[in-house]
Image (tube, rainbow, N blue to C red; front, top):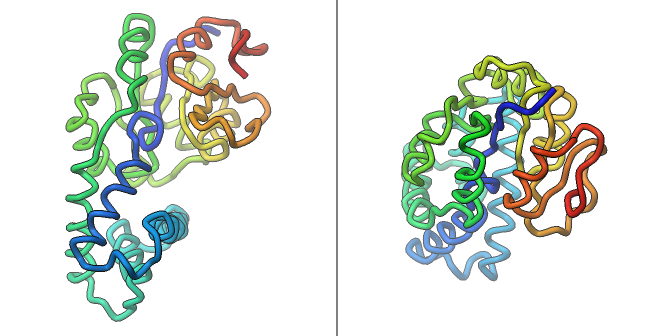
Amino acid sequence: MPIRAVLWDIDDTLFDYTGADAAGLARQLETEELADRYGTPAQALALWREITDRHWARFAAGEGTFQGQRQDRVREFLERPGMTADEADAWFDRYVEHYKAAWTVFPDVVPALDVLAAGYRHGVLSNSSSANQDPKLRHLGLRDRFEVLVCAVELGVSKPEAAAFLAACEALGLPPGEVAYVGDQPEIDARGARDAGLLAVWIDRDGGRGAGPDGAHRIQGLDQLPELLAGDTRFGARSGIR
């Protein structure tokens, strides 16, 4: 079956989340006079990301609330377990302002969307919430590019569960065999999409994370995506695309 639509991940696929997170956290630590507490900025970011990943995994598994996982991240990062919810929310809100100031899309995003606009429908499937991702896409000038925005928080199931991918396909009114999914995580995005029956495309911009799941197509830039979608991708990608 030909590919008729592309579903996209957002963070670190369309949007440079890692870069914005690093810049936002560094600025937050500076303004809060905490810059020397965690060693180097890279060490601080590594700790913040490890805490974030762990608490997000708990939330994705149904443990706690979206706002609660934010509060717990702040408490653990600051080593203040007795911090009130209001105090944690205020700290996180200050961090978010610095993080938002660094928002940017990857330079290959708009050119790729322009090339694909005429031939494919587009949507988003994110493991975050619509309250987070809709304003982000609007700020970045991308929201009108996508017919649907499907988010795990409202959906009640998250990637890599097949139900999340199938719900996004249903929102487009297409079977999974006619939909490609593009994401930066080899397991959550690529393996999950593949197992749900979508064409799985893993964007590995750094090029150093191994081969990825069998049956998923690995690209190192979105400039490779149009060729991949146009090719006979079900039986192996053409030269230059793994």
